[in-house]
Each structure stands twice: as structure tokens, then as C-alpha cells.
Length: 245
Image 1 (cartoon, rainbow, N blue to C red):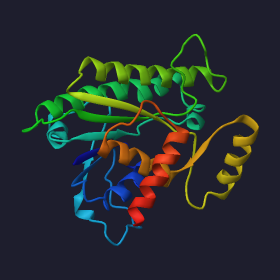
Image 2: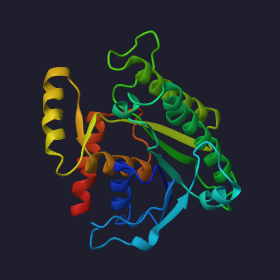
Image 3: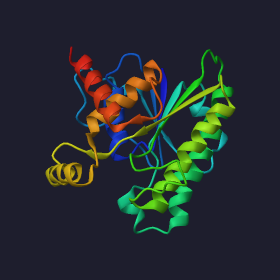
Image 4: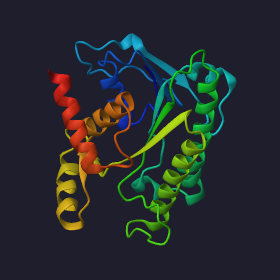
């Protein structure tokens, strides 16, 4: 499998790449980012860093032919490009929408075109969109948490799924909706996650679990849509346990 990781320099994407390089079924990893991406330093002893190929894209809203050529022949993409809820508080909403929604849809179109240009197209292109648990698709039921932002992310989810449905047989899409994502050693965030879980029912997941879950689904096919936080925790833990065997 040739896998594209969009937003490859980010927190979750770095862990996705780290795990990718130790999965034999993934033969090529295209790290799509605005700056060069190198293999993580803490690779497993069985990892193959030669599978990683860094592709620089200055603007996620515009895909030159040179970039599309590098994307051609890919089987799937995990899309992590976004402005997080916390960072969005300090950015104009039009810019947040541009990055989170317009760039996602532009990327979908570019990936479809690149996939269609491949030499062999035996099965649909799989697209995993990483959103968040608070994103709401029902405009008549605005979420209590950052409603403008959350509805925009939910609308993006709907548009991603509609695009895939419009190109049924050529593309499949699924949305991952994690809660608060915790990394190794993030002790303050762990405490905050525990408080949020029991006071505001905000779920959490480790970066290892969300990465393993999305990779398992992208490799084996989407088991359901959307993938809620509990689904991601369950699938991620199973995938990590299998990897240790």
C-alpha cells in the first residue's frame, strides 16, 4: 500500500508515520507537508525508514502537477490538516474555515485526480478525515462547545462524505472523531483529560491509539462511519496488541 499522510509534520501525523514504517503492508509513505519531513527518531527496530518520501506543498489549496505526480498511484490518505480548537481562538474564523474546510475539499479533488492518473486502479481510494468528537453535522442542533467551529468541522465531514458518495466506486471516505489526544509525557494534559472526562464527558485517547486505529482502518477497510472515540480506542488497542505479537 502507498499511503499519503497529509499534514505530515503535525503531532498525530508524526506518530502515524512512526507506526507506518514498521508495518510491512505499507510499502510507501508520502509525507505531505509545507516543510521537509524526516523519519521520527524513536523508530522501532523493525522499521524501514527508506519507505518515507517527503513531498513539500506550499499551499494545501493548490496542487501543482509536480506534486500530483508524486501522489499518483497512492491507495489511501489520512488527512490531519486542520487548525485545532485551541489555536482557532487566536485566528480569524475565515482563515480557520479556509484551512479546515476549503483545503480539505481541494485536497480531496487533487487526490481523486492523482488516483485517476495512476497506472493501475484496482480498488477505490480510501480517505480518512481526522475531525473531532465535538464536530456536529446537524445544523439544527448546534454543539455547546465552540458552536461555530464545531459546526464548520461537522459540515466539512458531511462534504467529505458527499464527495466520496458522488464518486462511489472510485473513492471511499470515513471520519475519525477523537476526543482529547494525549501524547507520551504530557502529564498536565493527562490530568486535564481526566478532569474533562468526568466533569464534561469529554473523552480522550492516546496519540498511539488514534494513530494505530486509523492505520488499521485504512489498511483493512472502514468498519463503520463515523469512528467515534470509543471505537478508536478499541481498534487502536487491538492493533497495538497485534503489532507486539
